[in-house]
Image 1: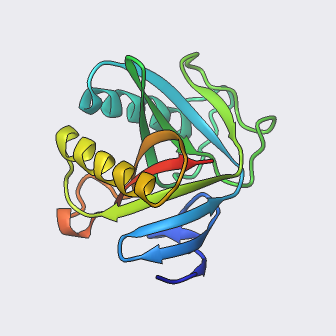
Image 2: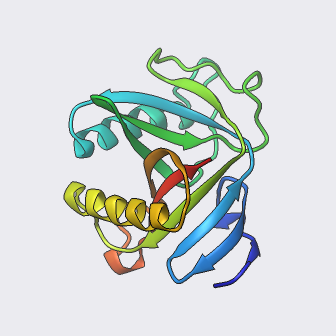
Image 3: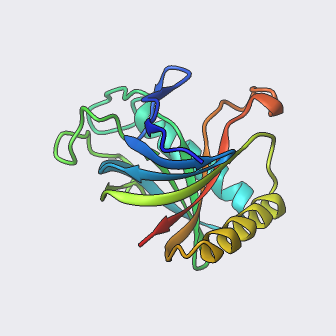
Length: 180
């Protein structure tokens, strides 16, 4: 159990949301995230289809499918969270942008959200997680966090850091909950 301070700012050269690690024990961390901008879409249906559709829409936007035709750097992680009867898929926008300086999306399903500073409990794991595996990991983390006295206010959030061709044991995945 350690206070590990500032987290890395990139993963394999891709910009990540700003955060510090307040506490860690093995794969679990308590993180304090700084504010950042998310481009997100809401997709109905199952998790696998939602992440494919959401990723395609957001990738199209950053690869020049926006009003200015501007290419925007890829960031990590690709985030996915269940919400009622749909999934929210999001990409963090590079820190050099504000909501006012981002190119307008051509697809009305893409919206920009100013994510406020937050505190999250996060557990890192590798592999190719299936929906049932993610649900099990989320429930285990929720149970642990609650037993530790943490007040969960949102989540689970699932974070995926690596390209599809990355070998399963080299993948960085995370499950997280936002705390009060």
